[in-house]
Length: 295
Length: 341
Image: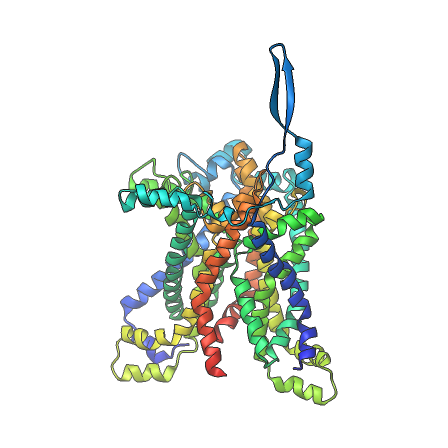
């Protein structure tokens, strides 16, 4: 919140420039989504028009082919014909279990890290940072052979466990920084009153930690939902989640001229994220800054 | 907290990381030292009207059996690292001797898959990271000057490119820059070149990928810097104004120093994330012109052949790359820690 005196002496030109910049950025940020959402209700020859890009707006071909300016053909093809709904179910299962497990073991670990003064606490955090820096795909190449040998490859549960583990370093860092903001006196006094460390954690700390836990849960969700490297390599075809399924569409349907299936699937996969940002904007912002403000 | 309590609290997450991050690293290193078994040949006598000949035949059953018994394959030491698909030492040596100029040397280098991937990964990382910081900072300053009611709305739309699934985000842009898509079409019109395609040349593909990278990550930098701007020291700003500092001087000498720790943070996160660039290459179908280290690993594991040993070797080299990238940060943290103690 810059003080009024600073705003006042801004020149008109500068203000227009800065407002114009914001408008341009908004266009760049939001327009692709709006455009794709709109185009997903058209036929391919309109959305990818050789003649004139305005066809995508007016929908000339769509009217010619289907009789109406909007068509659900893309969605029908993706959800019913290509069975995208199965991937939606799989994604829901994976995300639910990944978020729950990550938070359970992450809060325990993050709490412990924030309450220890020993040197190993620092080293564990540094190790987590190094693990966080490793591209997930490098780990995936370590999983494949053992998973094939032990018959673990392809199932949803294996992927869930792997995603939980890959998310742990990030979850630990975030929860650690949230826990550090909660005064240590709180659990000390609970312990004086006769609580064990776990009881203090369960009954005193967790109730005040909810905002931090929810924020971390959101990021855990995003990591699981957005993952491509792990889900593409570790899931059998019938267990595919949305993102690898969409990647699969590209290979098979582009040749058949059914790109619109992929467009519809992409829009379907974006809508939950859109809703998420709508409801949890504040938490996402606080989560992004949680790690940073500490320095 | 006592050591004992700490141990029990930390055990679940430690186990998860040990089993699924640490052990896979060991697995990757081990696999990189092996190659899969060659096919087993048997000598069979083949007789026809011209007489008998001894021929070598592939013994499918024996091959299968050998591969099932020793799934890891045959130990070859560091051979994987130096072959043509990886460090290609002998190719480099020949190239060094035969290349007449830096240009031909570079061209030859660019034909070796690993070096091609390293060059693109480094260019992407070191162009995207500073661009993200600059663009994010500009958005933050501009949004900060907005009316209070508009800010929420702007932040909402700004977050979209950041939270969207990377593969989905790159597909959305890919379809728009298609020659038949809105941006591709408009570019052809603006340039007056009906055959212009962003996918056709290496340079344009790289630019497209970098633009995607900035589009995707700028909101992250923006949100961090915007939060930093809310905690600006107002007294310092006001005294700078009283002393006659211009707007630019105030940004240069008050705002930027205040945000410097945040810049370090964003740079660290962005270096890590950009170094693993992968999904946009799949989404933009750009592998003909640009491959990254992560993409190489994916490409080896994907498909029928499943070149696991090759993927493992690239993985080890990638991990070494990450370690080099992070080393300045680690050294600094180590020094800070020692100073504190």
